[in-house]
Image 1 (spheres, rainbow, N blue to C red):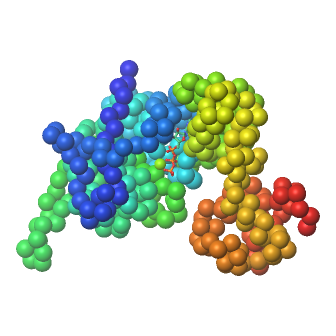
Image 2: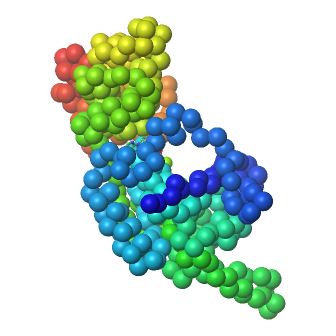
Image 3: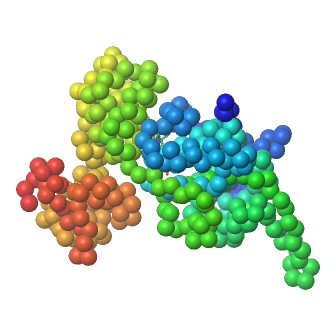
Length: 353
Ligand SMILES: Nc1ncnc2c1ncn2[C@@H]1O[C@H](COP(=O)(O)OP(=O)(O)OP(=O)(O)O)[C@@H](O)[C@H]1O
Ligand SMILES: [Mg+2]
């Protein structure tokens, strides 16, 4: 049976603040945790592949790859996960080493500013162990070049000195698996992308899968939740497990303080209404956007900047945080002439065009 993975995590922000210093290392040279993960997140995060819900095709392919690698006694091929936030990239990166019975070091692309920040991770690698680099698109080009030979030949070439005195030191690494995660696959350079043997895109979760996640997590939280309640939470979670977990945790607080700990569909609705989450999963800012577009700009088409100025928020916030879900929910459309509200948006806000 596979052992639990040993989690070794460094704090990317701290490393960055330190000028990208070395990750903290314990007496045996293992990179150790320097930040405390969110207790709720870690208690709800699946620890084994079988505990994961949805993403069945991805799980099936990974199981085959893990099985084959273990059969050959080789490390698993490098894996790249891409997809929007909260869909399970980090979760996959922690359950895979568990399944393989190996250790994992966690790094963040934002914390690796120079090759010297990457070296401790590479030299700490054990045979067949996993290096997880989150936000791998943020790794700068000079560091990326070290990854090429590390990934392909399990070797790094360090140049010492300068000019005519320069010498190259070849350092052999233990065969390992790199798992990369990114929300911006398009920002990865082709040479890096092509060095991942397995590439998986994580897509949105179905309502059924989200209900199952809510049900399973309610058991972990010791909070009985019936099917109708799970459906209300799933409905308002934007097809994203992380949101389903956050909504569930809020419902638990609300039920504890207002209903003696009992959860019903009505309690879930009241709890989520209270924090401004409606039945499509829109929050106050999303509805504010639609209201501005419909009321001030007669439903559009209008430019993003005009909406942003009127709402007094930055256009980046709207473009990155608000519009993707409104577009996905078919509440707005983007055309060359600007943003427009759809009939569905008018019906949802009970307004007439
Ligand atoms: N397939 C799944 N089954 C059950 N729970 C899941 C699944 N995927 C994700 N989760 C839950 O959602 C939470 C967020 O997932 P995770 O941290 O893996 O997302 P991510 O893709 O790494 O997001 P980010 O891009 O923001 O880093 C996890 O803590 C876990 O509890
Ligand atoms: Mg993550």
